[in-house]
Image 1 (cartoon, rainbow, N blue to C red):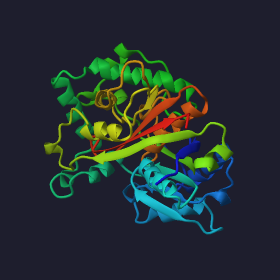
Image 2: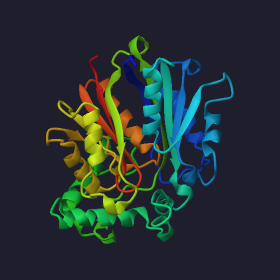
Image 3: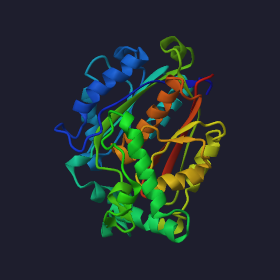
Length: 353
């Protein structure tokens, strides 16, 4: 594998609590494709490989991603693939495709219409199907158990968690696509009721409908298309046991291992972390070894908009955007999948190559 690969375009839909469109995401994807390709300066007919991430469980029917291909169009014929999960892992597949020279451009997309069902119950299907899923432990209650473990171990406090929420919403005031934003007072947040002790509403990402797309290009093709590509200098993912009882839930060894395999965090100026709960941002910062000088989630992160199966891809697009505009030279994006940070991906991008 010899080709360098870069992100050259990114777009996402507004993060909203409910849309009127279908669960196949076509209505959200068509304008997202147009904006991402326009930023990359790439005609749709020149895309060499298409790859998507979504979930049939969330859509409520088998092979729902096939219907999403309608957003691409029936002609010309395409090379296409799909993964059942967050589209950050579809980007990993596309990255491999370009690295091996099988294509020189790719468009990766993800989408999720969480409003169509009960997200907390749908995510219970990610747990062990024999001993845990039949009990229907909802995602928020599981996260509350993890947060409690960290509190009891002295790794974080409820105030630390509230400060993460307040900072995220303040940062999102400059993100017109965010679902939640605004200045909030930490004391007021701490005065609200629990939804699953010790988690309050502000500790949990909102239920969101949304979609996103990232355009990739290899080598000289990337240099021809845009002035400042965001080169992927390292990308790796690791997974931990599906059995919650055998994991240390107060840290994330798979995130640490992914970051090491992706080249480490030295020199990283901005990090976009896929943390659906406030305590998970604190946990990830520890696992990655990110110091106080690293800007965390300037977009507001998923606490201000959490389109399922696109949110991890959005982290890569948002991080790449800091390279595009020259505000950072080396950035990190993180994506997660599965219950309580089971599966983690780290992508490091740089402006110079």
